[in-house]
Length: 146
Image (cartoon, rainbow, N blue to C red; front, side, top):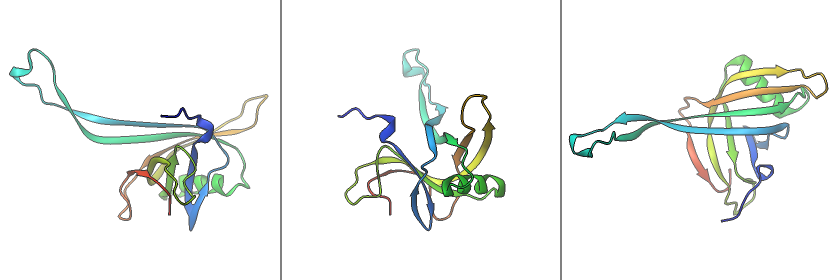
């Protein structure tokens, strides 16, 4: 197994075709599952659980660039409450034969906050979470995005 730098990861959004979210800086993909208690008397004093519904959220730091189409796509999705199709992959996923993997879903933009540090570039801190779509259930995708 090869070590991989975060720099190799790619965030994509779909706008008639897959496009790289090139103004993304730091991205944090959080996945977790709910739990159900399945403890029995035969568990030798251990509390037992089983994973239930999965949930995820992705925190994205973006450079503030209102001329960038990816920035505009996320901003529009936030202000219109429209879902946006995205993929957060561990490497390039637009080439034939790609083995990249990551979360693919329609997302709802639940946060779009602007940071205005005195000595740095303006940044947006966005949070996206999988949302309902009859076209695609959230999935862990491996391979080329098409």
